[in-house]
Length: 102
Length: 135
Image (cartoon, rainbow over all chains, first blue to last red; front, side):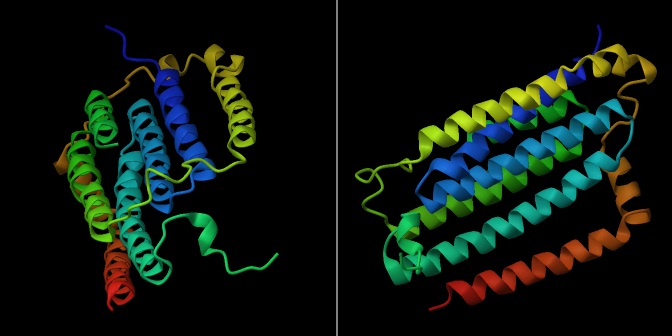
């Protein structure tokens, strides 16, 4: 049977990316914002692996390996920052983390 | 979210990227989401359910995001991509099998430098996270 056309994977990747992007832009809870960033990185990973399949190259999958590494490191540091912020402000609402006046 | 990660693993298996699929389950669903759960349980946030969840500017963001999404989808289904018949100019689709052996060969021969840099990056992230979270 014919393989799944590339467009379908790109559409899935785009949809997941946009759901993540809208999550980052609209949600107030910083933990949810971090989860949406992980969702965006996942969408990009799907894109890379789909192209790696359709171009018969392993470079896409190698890059996905490194993207996952960076995503894990960034999630760890981001959560450490959130823990530190929470200790000082006792809230996870992103509006309260602004020190700017006016 | 964990279900999403498992579904993405299924997509990777469909694309014959078995190493990446297992790494996805182990890293994303196994480590990152567990980290999130630890932080959520550790912080003991009481007012998550009572406060408004969405920023007041959310409808504007939603509208603009949908416009951008429509633009993206138009680009994906744009005619030239279909006329070149992507899957036929490269007749052998899916010949490279993403086994651990193949990826290991590429990773340790051709991409050794990024691999070492990634290890230094992880070390930096560990030190940073520990320093930030210490009392």
